[in-house]
Length: 310
Image (cartoon, rainbow, N blue to C red; front, side, top):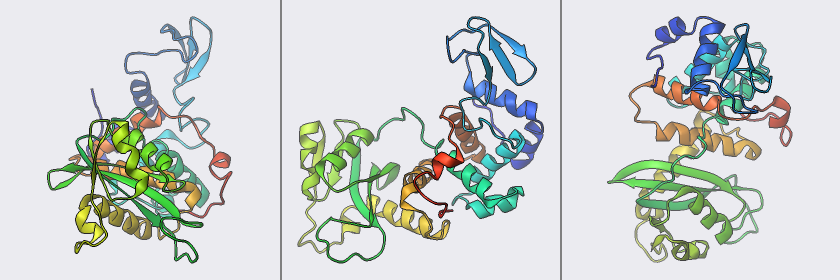
């Protein structure tokens, strides 16, 4: 059963203590009852209010161990307010905004929290797109001289898939890829779209193997057409436009390429749930996934890049 607060007042009332937060995490992490992560045993002894010991193998487990909340020194009540704020803001939040709203002691803490939460926005084993799906690529970055076609030396190449929903847009997928080769593009489609679906692309050769991979490939030749690419592949180009506007607006264009994949995950999470009638349900989904992903530290987040994003 999905249980979640509908309003901020309900959030404050339901999660006013560490215990109520831990109990909620426990129900989401083990909906069928506790299972030891080592031996799978169900019998335990409670060690206070925050830890359990497996009767089978003796392992001690806390409800936050192995989740994004592991080793946190901040109260779970503050984490819950952060997740509510992140999911209740339609266009997302910046680290500076989160720091101000929660009164966090440092920008670094808010920045790290947002990156941890972004890692929880992709559900493992999520369903692939199906039916009719438009696919195209876009670049992020400034002008680049001395390159031809779809080559790039300094820009980020993003491939986007948008499922058709009548004349509108259904669910989406997106990912940064190394290049516009068939290996990169077809690999993305195989990961994102169910075989047997109609995949609508332009005539770029990188998409040629789709037919042999079990997809029905619809090709639209752009050269010589009076319509623009955004008219011929309207859904995917609408998503590309919204993505760029979101990166420039909410995040002031300060997203580093090293962290770009996680911003794409956040955009996808928000867009695919844009019709949800309850912000509380988005909160529920985020907490549910937060206890299902591995913990990550600040050092591991910045290992390949300096803090420069929002």
